[in-house]
Amino acid sequence: MISAIGLCIKSLKKEPYSGSCHGMRFFLSADKETLHVWIYPEPWCFEQTPDEDKTQKDFPFTQEGLDEALLWLEEMFDSRRSFWEQKEKDKMKIFLGS
Image 1 (tube, rainbow, N blue to C red):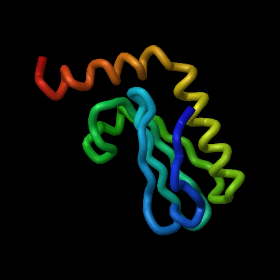
Image 2: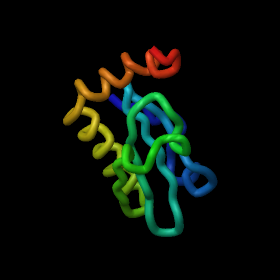
Image 3: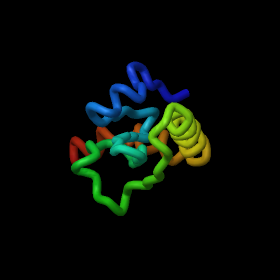
Image 4: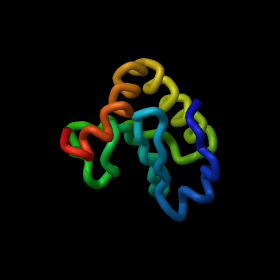
């Protein structure tokens, strides 16, 4: 299950939210009407991950849209679980240049 501790509509109005789940990283940001959600593999932060490695989806910027986004994150993790888990295992190899 993806942990979204501290995530709520009010906090997204002020600043983006990021997190990770077993090799899958995610980044959420919002503007007036749209919640933008990206997923991408370990190990880099959002800004350092190439755009071609990111998958993005938009949702309405409402509580229902946030709930949908969290379900989408769960689905994306479950649909590629072995890929994400391998990325988690490989992240130290990438850092160490092995």
